[in-house]
Image 1 (tube, rainbow, N blue to C red):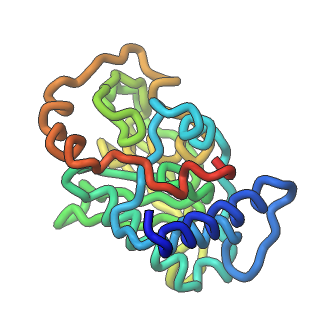
Image 2: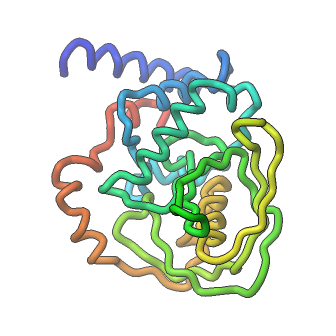
Length: 233
């Protein structure tokens, strides 16, 4: 490890130690340890996985809302951009991602709107499911944090979602149906520390998924970066 990497690792370790020593203190938008995670020089962020015990603990923690100040900040813009880059990266190829999956315990998700023209990815801060609608359907689901597995999960066909508009900071609501509604339910669960395997009727290994992503794993894309190994995790 060269000197610059040692300095970065030491700085991150100190920040994460402070974060775990007691009540986490704020210094401007976001907490110190959150700013460290967001500003790391990686467009594709490390995704926490259940195969790792410390990752699994973090994935089970409930998230809290973002303040107006945080939503106005450059850090939120950076987090949003990196979440979008991460979920669309070839080694992931997902349709949604929640902030706790990249180490930020805040209520924000990125979802691919398969129900809209062009199927764009959009960011939803302070997301909540207000109401579930329609019949229960059997949904085939996977998760970036549970690589190589799939499950059958009972979900409702529709949902009313609520979030904060990141541009106007006004509260928004929308009724959504179909597979997009299922994506929102899946991602909202992440914000409460719930994984799809908790709700699944069955789970199995998806060998096709593993085979498609083997080259990325061999190239080290799943290697855990040094900051995740610090005392804060």
